[in-house]
Amino acid sequence: MYIILNAGPVERRSRAFLSLVLLSGLVLTAACKRDLGSQAGAAVKTAPIDCIIPRPSSVVASEGKFVLQPGTAILVNGEDAEVRNVAEYLASRLRPATGFAFEVRPAAGAVANGHIQVGTISGDSMLGEEGYELKVSAEQVLLSAWKAEGLFRGVQTLRQLLPAAIEKPTVQTGQWEIQAGKVQDRPRFAWRGAMLDVSRHFFGVADVKRYIDEIAYYKLNRLHLHLSDDQGWRVEIRSWPKLATLGGSTQVGGGPGGYFSQADYSDIVAYAGSRYITIIPEIDMPGHTNAALASYPELNCSGKAPALYTGIEVGFSSLCADKELTYKFVDDVVRELAALTPGPYIHVGGDEASSTPEPAYKKFMTRVQKIVQDRGKQMIGWGEVAKMDGLSPQSLVQHWTDDANLPRLAAEAGAKVIMSPATRVYLDMKYTPSTALGQDWAARVEVRDGYTWDPATFISGVGEDQIIGVETPIWTETLATFSDLEYMAFPRLPGTAEIGWSAAAGRDWDEYRERLATHGARLAAMGVNFYRSPQVPWPDSVAYK
Ligand code: TNX
Image (cartoon, rainbow, N blue to C red; front, side, top):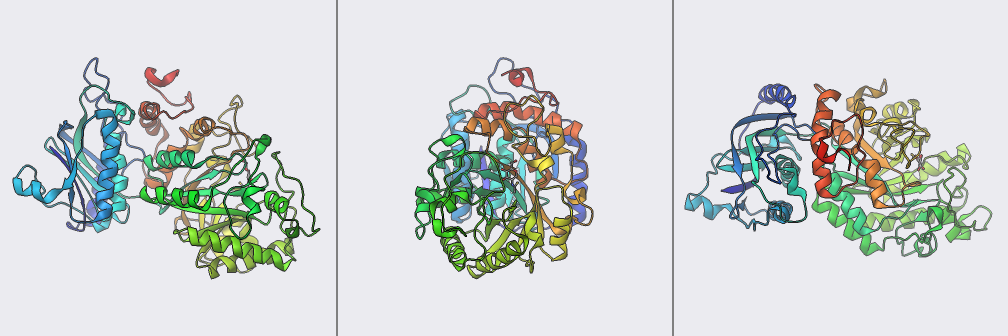
C-alpha cells in the first residue's frame, strides 16, 4: 500500500460543488464522538475522520480503512523538491511511533509496476495556496494540492486521522488504521498567527522550534517573535552589538536572559519556512525600549542610560523622537533584520507609548513606516499606530485593546487589520481566578470564551474584507518555562486556529468541545502540557493527568 503525494492542477470544480460538499461536511462533523471501532486492549485506537481541528471545509466518510504496513511507502508525484521535502516531513512524523521505514520515492516507477492507482490525481488551484484534498480508501491514501504548502497543511490532517499514539516518540503496538473518506479543505483567512514574547522571559532556539511544530499542527502560518522590550533585547544587531550582549543579559525576575545570534535567528526562520510558517520579527518602539536605552546612553533624550529592568510594569520608556540618531538606530536595526527575514513584514510595535508625547509619537511612527518601506518591507504595528499621520494601506494594524476606533481608523486608511483582541486570544490571560499563571487585566479567558467569537463581526465597521486574519499572542511576564507556556497556550490555541481557518457558518461550541476532547490524547502523546478545562469532556485517559 502506498501514500501518494501529488501537487499540480488537474481537476476543475465549481464553487457550487464545493459549497455542496461543505454542507455535507457540516452534518458529518457533528459525529466526532463516535468510536469507529477500536481494537480492545491495543495501545492505538482508530480515530474518527471528523474530529479534525481546524474543521475542514468538507469531510465525507466512506467504507473501509487504510492500514499502515511496515512496507508502506510515500510516493512523490513529480520532480518538485518542495513536494519531496513535504513527503520526507510526513515520513519523519510517521516513523517514530510505527517503527516503519516509510521509504520516500518517486511515484512513477510504482505506477509502472501497477501496484498503485494514481488515477486522475486532483491538484486543484481552486483550493488555493494552502488548500488540499485528501482521499483515503482501503487501497491508498491520496493527498493532493495546488502547492506544496497545501500538501503540508494536508499532512497535518492526515496525522489527525491516525490514532493519537502516532504522535508518541517511541514505537507503539497496534494497528495504524485510517478511516476511509475524503477531506477537501482550504482556509478562510490568509493570516493565522501566533506571537511569542521572548523578551520578558527568554526562550531559546529549541523551544521556539518546538512551538513552531505545535502551531503547525493546527495549520497556523505566521509566527510573530516579540524580540525586544523593556526587559530584554533578544536578537544580535551587528551595528549596535550591546543591544544583545548587554540589553539581552537579563529578564523578568533577574535571570540571565539571552539572545539569538543572527545565525540562530536564521536557523529559526529556515525551520519555520520548512513548516510554511512566516516569521515576523518585532522590535517594539518607541515605548518598551528600556533594554535598548540601557545599552546605549546616546539613545536617551537625557544622554544617560537607565538601569536594566527586570520588573513587569509597562509604559515608562521611550526612544527620543527628537534625536536624529534615533532614526539612524531604527534604520540600522530594520536594515539588518530585513536582510535576515525573507517574509515581507517588520513589526515595529508602537503600543503603550505613554512616555512619548503624542506629537512626537506621530512623527516617530511616520518616519519609522518610511524606513521599513525603504528597506523593502511592510510595516506592522499594534492598534495605536492607526493614530499616526499617513498610515499606509500597505501597513497592517494589529488590534488588541477594546478601543474599536483604532481598527476603524486603520480600515479607513485602507490598511488591513490583524485581529488579536486581548479578551479572546491573549494566551497569557488566566483561564479562571484560580489559574496560577498569567495575568487578568483584560479578562479571564476560559476555552469557551476563546472560541465563541468571530473576527468579522467583532468590531462594527471592520468586516471580513478589512481583516487579514487572526493572531494569538502569548506574553511571558509570568511564564518562565516552556511547560508554563504550553499550559497557557493549550488548549486555547487550537480554537483560535479554527477561527482563522474554518468557515464561520456552522461553528458551534458544543460540537467543537467534543472534537477538542479527542485532541487531549494527541497533545498528551506529543508531551504537550495543557490545561484540563472542565468545559471540555476529556476522556478519562487524559482527564486527571
Ligand atoms: C499588553 S499587548 C502589552 C504587553 C504586555 C501584555 C500583557 C500589547 C501590545 N502590549 O506589553 O506584555 O499586555 O498581557
